[in-house]
Image (tube, rainbow, N blue to C red; front, top):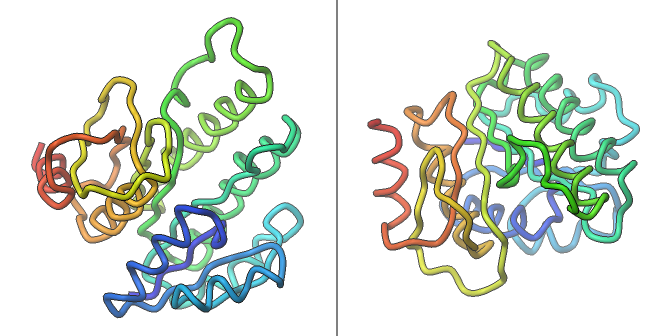
Length: 220
């Protein structure tokens, strides 16, 4: 497959790029800064410089021509304010979905966040609350699109622990944490499983091998 990943220099995206390239897929990662290109090349991915905060649909669509799938893994990141949660975590996701529809790229995965489906609890840090609201709005936009075969993945608290390959994947898992390694491995399995189209899934560490967990969700 040819897969285009938004947020190609992110921690999950770089892991995903390595996994996809290793199995022989053609991977392009969209990045904002040219100096990030070397890390993508080292991961086996083609770096594509395109700022999703200022690009047009046509700009992004040019980079998605001929792709079989798209993964939105971009984020404003730590240290960014509420305004960039809106322009990146929501706005860029909508733009990326627009470009996928414009080019006929139906398979569309979103890396979202647990808690994005409800109003943040009282007392939540204002910037984190803005992030959750932006993620929720982006997810709602994607779910409303008949032109996309979408799957939304909502991991728990992310860690840099080595992946175990053992997860819990369900419509609702309850709170928990999960390694970025295991998120990337789960994304690969989701790409390959059409039975997960139209599903919003939560992910935490668990005791079920990734392939088995994805297969079980697809059969429900």
